[in-house]
Length: 113
Ligand SMILES: [Zn+2]
Image 1: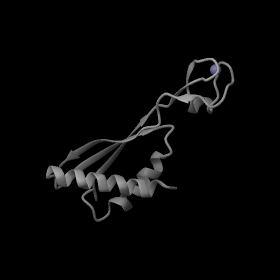
Image 2: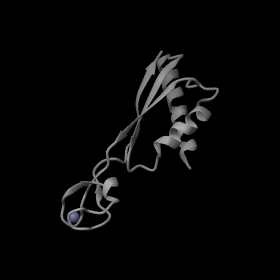
Image 3: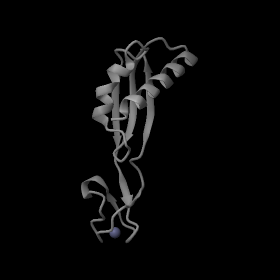
Image 4: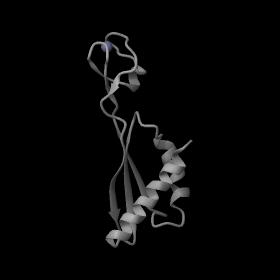
């Protein structure tokens, strides 16, 4: 589980943003996580309190929005939902599609209190 290190980086980035913008309290932080990114939303949620402890984000609400991961088949060119097909094209059986979305990991919104 590599999420803790990444979430700590996110917390640091939010603190820098808050300092630059004169924010002293954060109500909520919204992260956008793609289904095909290496970040697992439930692990991110689990390690957020530890990463936020003693920072501006302690006690802030964490909101995670997942982004659907679609892929384009390299064989037949059709587009399909990667996870529900286990990465295999449902039309021709080709594996390893080109990801068209779902690799996101972004800070989407920071809401000040
Ligand atoms: Zn195909």
